[in-house]
Image (cartoon, rainbow, N blue to C red):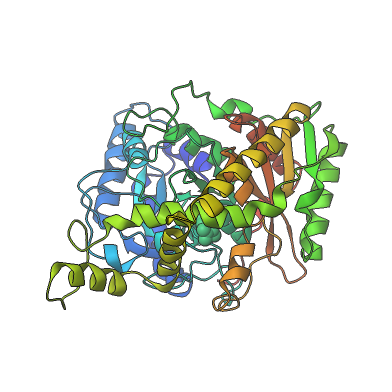
Length: 487
Ligand code: GLN
């Protein structure tokens, strides 16, 4: 096996046994990036100097015989929405094109304390708005399985980089599906933790009642290791919850006996790709054969999810993005006569089309006279959706669905039709609206050879259970070992 193909847990073993150094692996990954990133374009920026410094530090510890943790010396990538001290953080937007944060996001800080090696910052849809990474203010990213297709979004750079072995794992963020949908499109594993499990301090805000940070990795074990590394209460984020974080590795158990799995009829939507439906149903059958108890459940408010999401997320985005006015951060227009014109031009020139569309929509749904009709109504239906899940989780431990209705679509296919693009998240959005955790794991290949994702949702703060079911599925199948061959 080549060094860049290793998983986190495999590399950790080799580092401990002194069979390889972190510097060697970091070099191998940069070589891999040199070789393939021209085609994939997953990275926005590489941070070589800092990476080698981090790697050498770990290597010195190993030589001295010191014990190292399971993330020490492991090269990973960061979605460019996470603030990195002294390193440009663009959020995929021209308006933050020259923004250099003076602090680290809490997750970055935590991974630094665990001595991970950061290879660079990964491409994304501008302000995480999108499902294809085509909304990046800088360039598109291609799917390593088929260069004519999207890698998913908005964490498309993260998922594509993991799938193309350009990093061992990555952090992404998920507001409506942005970890799980790209993970599904690229044939890797992505986990969106419970709202409150991971601090969002230093995450550039899109929709604050939905945003969450999580791992994208090559297998379930690596996801558990990274989740251990980033979880926990943080006084800097008032929405992070102060309850104990279990060691997620204890849930890497190959056993689903007596686990109750719910299958919601509403998730096998019209227009679903037949290959997706077949693969997911096969996966459910396998889990049943392995001893799980499978039963039909109903989540009746599912059909409203996309509509509610696009009211709530645009409302929150219009408020969160008000801060980019040319005064406090990044870009400022060069052409203006007075203050108001400076604000206007800065925003007109700095934001892309999709971001503007959302600010306009969000401002509208919050405006006097419309607030009750849209925002308040959406919040009420959101509560009904939450009740649906609470009821379902009285009968089952996890819920299984496809991650996305189709495999990766073609580049350009949905750019002109935002509604079509919005619909690609129909199966992931309810998880964010209700705050529960969910994972996407590879469960098959379509007839065209494209990866298909299986979504497993759990109760609030029950990441352990979804890890257990995902791990069991993985141990009994080989889909997670499949890698794109074109490069
Ligand atoms: N695709 C969804 C959107 O465009 C979700 C994005 C996300 O999770 N950040 O809003």
